[in-house]
Image (tube, rainbow, N blue to C red; front, side):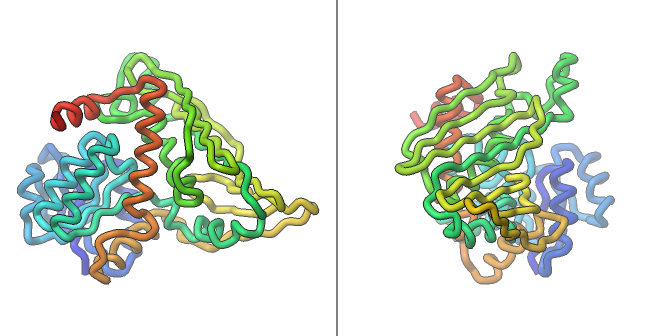
Length: 334
C-alpha cells in the first residue's frame, strides 16, 4: 500500500482522489494546506485525520510514502524538492515546473535521493493515446500534427470584472500556454520528439499572462501546429495527417474517440475502452513504478518533460511572457 499525502485542495485534487481510489495500492493518508481550516475541511471530506500546514513537517512525516502536488505551478519545484530530500516519491501536476531550470533541479533531487519523480500528465498514460502510438504506422509518413485545446476559463469572467484569480496571475506561473498548451505539446514530443525550431504567437493580457496563443513547430519532414486558449472555446478535433490517411482525435487532452480515415475513404475505429476517471492511468503508472523500485517513468519520462518545458520556455521568450519564477531562477544561478 502506497500512503499518499496531498498538497493542494482544489478541483483537480478532488478528481485525482476519485481516480486514485480506483487504483489498487492507493491510500490517502494526509492533507496539506497553508491554512488549518482548509486542511481540516478537505481532510474530513475523505475521512483523513492527518493534516499539515507546514510543508517541511509533512515531508519529514513517517506516515506517508509519496505526495501528489497540485498546488499553483510556481510552488511545484520547491515543494517537490523538499519532499524528495526527505525520501518521498513525487507525482507532480502539469506543468511539472515553471521552467526547465526548475525541472533540472527537481530531477537532480530525485536522482540524489533515489525517489520517483513523475509529471502527472494524464494524456500519454491513457489507453487511447497508446492506441494512437500503436496505429501511427498505418497512416504512412506523418506530415502534420494539429493539436487544439481551447477552453473558456470559468475564471475569465471574474478577470474581466477586475478580479484576478490564480489562473490569470503570473505570480503562480499560470496562463494559457502553461495550463492548456501543455496538453498539446507533451503528446507531440511523446510521439515525434523535439522539433528543430518553433515560432510562437500569443496574446498577453494586462495581468501579465497569456490568454491564448499558437505555436508552429518544424520537424525534418513534417510540421506541428499547436493552438491553445483560456479565453475562447474550440470544438474542432485534433488530427495527425499522414500520406496514407489521418488519425482523428476527438480531444487531445483526454482522447475518448479515435479514428483513422484512409485516403480511399474507409474508416477504422481504434478507440479503446478506458476508465471514466481519466487520471486513473497516471496514478497506476506511478504506483506500479514504486512497487517495481523504478525511479523514472518510460511514458512520462524526464526527457519528455524536459523537451516540453524547453518548448514552452522558448515560446514564452518569443511572446515576451516572463514569470517571477524565471527571475528567481536567474538570481539563484548567478
